[in-house]
Image 1 (cartoon, rainbow, N blue to C red):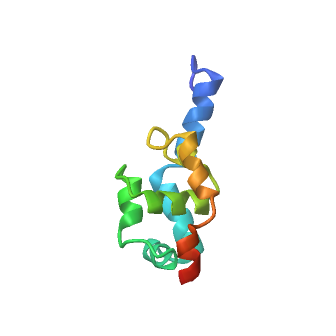
Image 2: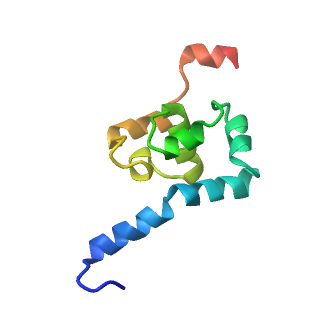
Length: 101
């Protein structure tokens, strides 16, 4: 406990630790064996998880990571995406893509 730190800031610090890039990668590795296996299973570009976790925008990868973590995009990547962006996680695939599956 740090004196003179407000409750909201302590909660924010805890959330930041939970969503630290190394914690995200660790959870992916536990579930998939490796980050590369996660990328392959989700048909993502090679090293795109690394790029997203280094604040580079790879939208499709960010969405896959957010879905895996069961978090809205704007919670997992604050400042990069807004709440309006989170609707992309919930919408159905485009009608033309459905035919190709």
